[in-house]
Length: 383
Ligand code: ADP
Ligand code: MG
Image (cartoon, rainbow, N blue to C red):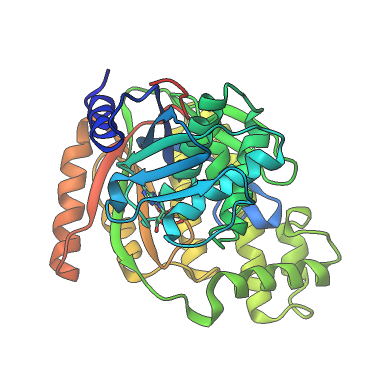
């Protein structure tokens, strides 16, 4: 039993006055490449990180499901299995409640139970603590009910919970990777049809450094919604269903029918889809230098054409590019803050992290927080 498993079992005992019957886990993630492509039917290439949400649980008497979180000590919640599950307050409980509603809709007979969550995924930092909460909730509820559900169907249930109960219109990547990740593998996920392929990322000399800027800037000009609309209107003008169906030549030839923004947004998306597939080939042949170049190109495209970077993310990527042992770096996630990732030689990782933190602190007056991860395991229903 790991220290964290022992700790959550102990807290479960203190809180609910009996032993947990099981503990499940579900990781957060970073996307290695393929940014802002999911809602254009493109490809993404995430890995699970070495940080996860644990959920300890035990069936209970009565007809209620009780929810508590170490990260929300003052806000326990519960819901009744005999009435329709609805969203409400506290907000954090909407994620597990939404999952419960989705499981019921899928025909799972939930049992009354107590659940305690404990996460070491930074919350709200773009590493998908929300999906790890949803997936851990799902596994705890399925475990208590003695049921299993197909991986992709479970990802869809968790995604729906995030859409309908938490009000975040996310793609399928976060939930899919949390469930389907394998150690030493990245997941190439086709956001058009949900098909996926495990890609080896098993070189022991490599690490992924995750650098959290600790900032979240307000989204300018409507943020994501505006960009999504620009992508969809560009696709319509190009005569394709989605930008997945366009290519760089089509976009550059359409300069007179697209607005400036439609042109640059579309140029990012079609080039990013192309880069993601090239990155997979590079990874499969162990060509990490090429993989790293594609990461830098992805960052430049997100910064210049998609306009979702910020000076904190640019600083980390720029500094990383000057350091020995760095293959590549880029912002990851939606942008405007959150995290950057650096693909690095394991034996240089400490020096790289220190150099980046130092220059970041000197410029912004507060440190970025860096941790190292390898491609970690997906959700586990018995830890
Ligand atoms: P991210 O997924 O990038 O971490 P989100 O804004 O999507 O950020 O999700 C963060 C929200 O998820 C939190 O505000 C909280 O409501 C919920 N959450 C995540 N992990 C936990 C946890 N361990 N306990 C309670 N709530 C959590
Ligand atoms: Mg999230």
